[in-house]
Image (cartoon, rainbow, N blue to C red; front, side, top):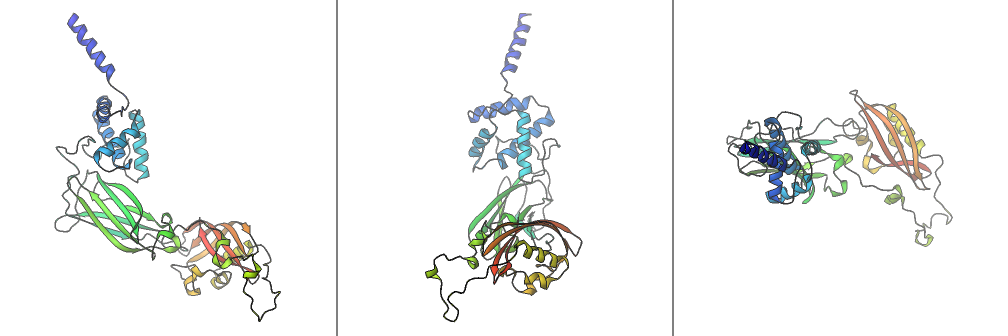
Length: 383
């Protein structure tokens, strides 16, 4: 009887020593506490918990090498319990566009973040090479293309698409221009139907893009090797790039010279010649521009502007890359943001419907300048 009581007490003591939250004091305590937390879960929950830890270690930390990744993971989840770790993994998966949720069935195979090798490694994919396609989704009627879709595929020894499932391959996309890295993105390839990456032009800073072209490099890590491929000189749409914040007064065409001694004097003109102050509110020019677009009077809309980025009337009225595809415009609000004698900024909110029937809601900042007493549109930025 005493022996039975002793065994019961021992079991109670051992169970009471089990940890229900992460202890990241060291790698050993990290592993021990995670093992304790895992042992309290049923088989299905154990698989999902291991997947959540893998998602966090692979995509939630910025580190190189397994030891450094574990150290950063420990800092991230120290003191957290199982539900908190699931919640954090859901957030990381959503942020990286990974089709994984803590409430779904196990999809990544048998994973253990503390082991480099496993008896049955789902990431031991026998790929020989890599390819990726760069596609352009449907273009905006005003801006033209707004993004690129990058879709990697693993190939077998014969150069054909490899069919596989149940993997958890880390895929990294890097974007460069003129040798300078612009951005890095990661995702998880689970099978040969991987949806890839979307490059939004609005996330690429215009001032960092040389010649309106980017270089794209894709790395896919299997358990035995890393496959890599690059495409050089992929064109982007300069109209849709992220424009630097600016002030219309900073436009070289709108420079105000305060020192009269620095103003070049044309001897053929009277000395007291002064710039003509524009009359009316600059938002009237924007309203006229949008009304002409709505009535498809492209020539009238073009004449309200003096914007070198729009080029010739032929470019401006192009149905694919210009304003020629606009069917109608519904203006919701126009307001002058700021104005001086030579420059102004006007904000406009309106809906544009193209000739295919697609409607796009836009918030646009128009920069205007004084041209012989008339407000002319000099810049156009979609916010």
